Image (spheres, rainbow, N blue to C red):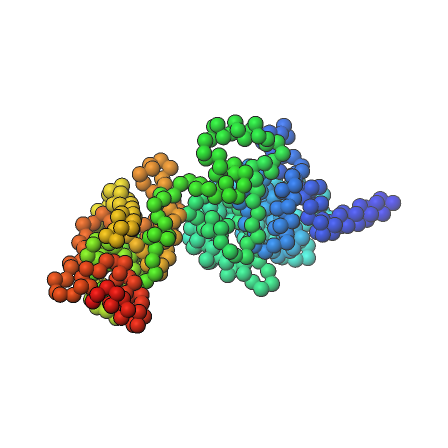
Length: 498
């Protein structure tokens, strides 16, 4: 009799286990627990809101998921519950979670542990057991390899160190090496037969997360409003707005558009693609050429700038490459000097930050000296950040041109994509509005390089004294001329009386 009851109970548990495999909403509602800091028991059964149920089904149905959320909407718990469900019912699967810090990575493991520890009766139905460690949780099956949940602090090399069934990126907009990790990690989850990505974050301008959210791609995008929590009403929101001011839009957005509305504040608010970006044209040979760079092993950001006779500046060539030692960086710069095979484009000087001229204690040599050994002689620019940004903003400012139109003193060729991206997205330093934010660091290299040029005393090109009316042409006339076909050039010469 006892044996019969035992077998019946085991059969029922096994059937329940199978039912949970097929119905994830049932699994979450009946077997998942989470932390509710306002509850007397703290760890309580999970009763999902409608938006949380929709988010869970979206994760299940889509390979690439992006969640833009308000604070404290339980999305991280939802993702972890999905990960538990996947690992319990798929022996041998691996979930990799990436957080912005080591403490955050440990916190994800702790939360995962809370969920798995409170479903012991269900696990018995599938003959499962688990082991919780500091950085991972293992779920063992009697008939297969263990499933693993691993949590790491995001680092530049993270993306190359794993192959996963699920990649969970928490607070994606606030991870410093987000772009490098994504470029490395994407091939590991982009398998024809599997691989899932779940990205979760509140918004931050100028980040990869914002770029993915606002661009066309394969991500299923879901916005979780501040009012997803039924306990929040208009009175609560107005009280919160009084405490936070305008930052309430970033922390507790009511819509995706509100979340994206100048959150954090653009540093180069003057920058306008329609005014400051132009298509490439042939640089006149009598214009002054400068190069300017920001260098470290993390990035070489190198630009060539042409200055016309009116003092208008054109950034016309970009090198944006990480992981280069000095000799490799010098080789790239030499190649840029041969741009289009024209040796006359050698710069008047090569501007670089003062830190490259500091001598290392071990060798007594500076990086500037190492560049000179490789044929690149650098000129020290100023590292006064506020003065540099002020002069760069002066160049961006639109002024009255000879033809009566308002035009900036700085334009960027459209091929300089990383500089354009950084100028659009770099934010104001929250503690110092006269400086830009230094995170995400990947965005700072290109503007820093341009700052070293802007703060330096550069010279306009000299106007030719020979009897050639082209010396009176404006920068826009030169741009139109060199962008034109041969027949159109003849037309322009006649039009301008040459």
